[in-house]
Length: 430
Ligand SMILES: NC(=O)c1ccc[n+]([C@@H]2O[C@H](COP(=O)([O-])OP(=O)(O)OC[C@H]3O[C@@H](n4cnc5c(N)ncnc54)[C@H](O)[C@@H]3O)[C@@H](O)[C@H]2O)c1
Image (cartoon, rainbow, N blue to C red; front, side, top):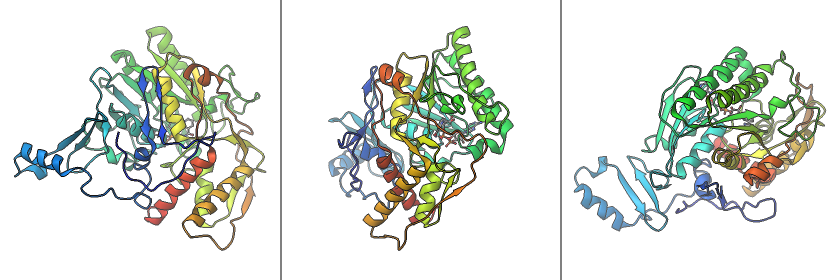
């Protein structure tokens, strides 16, 4: 697949090897795409170099003109096939990034609920670039049309405003069921609605999977382990959840969603996958949703004090979004029907993490010739109720059954995310 011209950001993995692609060939499903193509979809013009005009050869233009016989060509779509890489670029009135041209037996009809959210939109980018037909179902409660607007109009893409609490009919082969607010201020905003989304939304999507015989994957969460008594947490741990606390609408919602999922598997033979996702971060995360990574970056970029809740000794592990998308796709296409943890085991105390974020923000500012006059301060505030002290995934199962493990270091991920927020600030949208 040809790659677009994007300003070079040198990205290396945990072993110091340069990362140029994301995804891999596994279980007969190829999820690999060039990183610079993917990056061009979320890093803004500030960092994106415009592709040279005339790069699409004039010969192709001429061929198209002949085909459309001149007059109305401006109003007609044209598609350019790249024989060498077996990919196709579709154009309506705007041009889309080239997507793979898959034979019909390999091209899947994929429904992504919550596809306009943070995780969903990155999954959608990947599935689109891989050449599948993708339908996004979203009520835009926490997601935004802008996260997937670059695909609107593409013949392989459909965006539907719909609340999963209501039934939905469509023909599809795979369902990634992600719809659910994920950050505490959002899911606590209307706790009853969060439980309805978790229960009724999952019930509706499982019903759809049953009718269409689609494979169903639910994005569950490490919150099903609550404030855990064992470290790290493996999938056999049943959890330690407060059923009536302020986080219960989400934690218990996801637990009952898992129960429903396995109920449909046992009773109706629905083909299910359960991903237990640990803290994930990356571009397109809502900067105001109170999650620690975005809080720290925005505060540091603005030169404000960085707020740590508690004494900073509570630990967290953070995985980068591209690793999570690799894991979700691998799980969907594998035979593993048990729950699978997807997370990065590199553990930081929140206090340490604040320092890493501050370092990376300073590094990026320095590279851009904008070194601030003084360092931002890290300040400590009281910890919210039920905030788990420690959380770290045991990802042995994912390693053994999916041959998946995170490639991205937290530092590399943070650097991309800092550039993303910085560019958003530069264009005035943040
Ligand atoms: N981001 C993480 O660190 C993380 C960790 C664990 C689990 N997860 C899970 O992954 C999924 C996606 O999380 P995210 O971080 O992208 O959150 P997000 O809030 O960015 O995305 C959720 C999406 O679901 C949509 N949505 C919410 N309620 C809906 C409803 N009733 N009907 C239709 N659409 C609805 C929202 O508008 C949004 O687009 C969630 O299920 C979440 O529980 C995320």
